[in-house]
Image 1 (cartoon, helix red, strand yellow):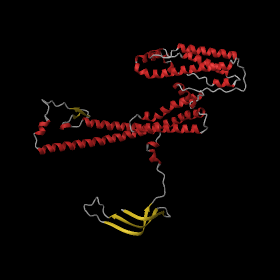
Image 2 (tube, helix red, strand yellow; image 1 turned 90 degrees about the vertical axis):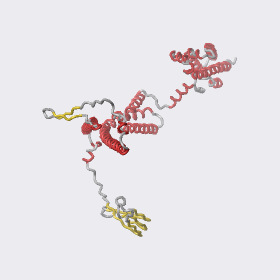
Image 3 (cartoon, helix red, strand yellow; image 1 turned 45 degrees about the vertical axis):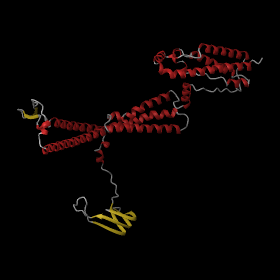
Image 4 (spheres, one colour; image 1 turned 120 degrees about the vertical axis):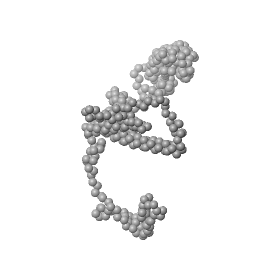
Length: 448
């Protein structure tokens, strides 16, 4: 039945029991008899055109509350005791059905031969006794029996075998679907039982995540903690849904899927709480940038400013002596660490980082002392003093086992060796700059 109209209007009757539909300028088509149930080729129909058509539709506007008992019988409306009782009863039923299916499969009379005989003992109890296997003098040649029949009989054999296989297949499909539905219902009850714990535990986890975030994130006001909290909740929602679907579909155990989100977020909550208790800036981007800058050897620029108030005046004689000692220590370091190192020397010796640390401390102490100078040219020249970088690539031999391993696995350590040679070359260039700047500072300080 089809109605096509140019326009229409729908309203509700005053008693609110019917919908009133008024259509204008259209036509309708309707089959008088069901075309599928009729054997006639021509199906009678009715067709009309109208300028205005009114239709009344029954409508119940009184929305009634669903019976509470109907919800109580579902898994979402049961308490823990009822859920556990339902799981036990359904599991017992599934085991019983599975035992029946298995017994029927074992006792099926293949080739028309029964494998078990029913017996009754003296007390009237029934039991089954398995028949002994049929002993054959030689295996039955089924192909010869099949070829020895006429074509009609062979076709009959094949059609019967195909029909029997299809019936058996459909039967087992039905049984498997029945068992699958029962097991799915058990899993839904088990999921609802686990939810009563996981949802409550998720609130505790989010407390140990949200509370430390307010203490750790000190920049950005309310916006940054809110954005990170929303991101963590979305992450929790995705992980929780993934675990729920794995548990619902039987790919994981129910407790594994339902506790997946808690297992993922609990270490995060413990980590945030630990960092907040120890007043650690986890979300300080400068700390991460400095780490990667030091690891990859990105050079830093020194900033020295004129001090308005100087507590200790710079003694030119002491300053020159410190700069001369700095030059001597730099020259000794360069002579002790050769410019070019072979692959084996690089992995066994490298550049002495302990001496480099002492040299760097000496440079920083000298710069700090000279920054008290009242000469602007001296302070400006201190900005040319490089900041020495102590990198792992300069001396990887601090771990002897790694050095021996890389020497044995020669090609594997070549990229590290090449990059390490580059860092050593850069270090020598920085030390040469230290000597140059020290000479220029000596000239500026010791003008006489």
